[in-house]
Amino acid sequence: MVSIEDLKKISVLDNLTQPMLENMRALAHLNIFGERHVIFEKGQKADSFYMLLTGKVILEIEASELIMISLEAIKPGYSFGWSALLPGSKCNAYAICVEPCEVMAVPGDRFLELLEKDHTIGYKFMKSAASILKRREERRTGQFLQVMSKHPDLQKLMGL
Image 1: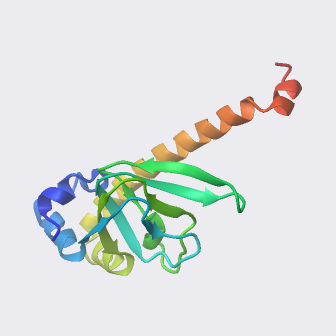
Image 2 (image 1 turned 90 degrees about the horizontal axis):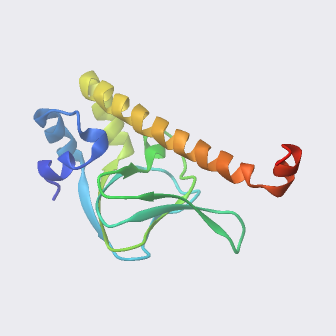
Image 3 (image 1 turned 30 degrees about the vertical axis):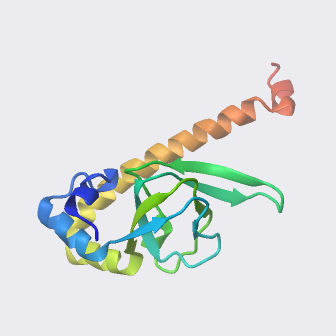
């Protein structure tokens, strides 16, 4: 069972009040996964939003049959499975436990119903979500530019 204290550990929920967390608690369920457990796969229906309590999850994409690229490592207190908050979406990566994990899951459709029903929760959650997703986008853009700047063909073009 998910506790209010568990929910308070999640960064995207840190600005919600106690009554708001109670509403979230009613939707969330706790999953215990072992090392190398695949939480979701690319292409499957995105039906749950996840919040990591303990352990570590990596998000990976398949570049080819032989190459998997890690996009991000999710640490305790952070969320993943954002696609579940967009109706009809599919997962665009694999989520894999790299060690035993405790993961809270909230059905995306029920979560959206809560956000629609209580606009204050919706606003506070989406404000936090936008901030988190902006930081992730900035980090990934920086990483991409750094890799590109080291590409031999681009270095030649830039006169480096």
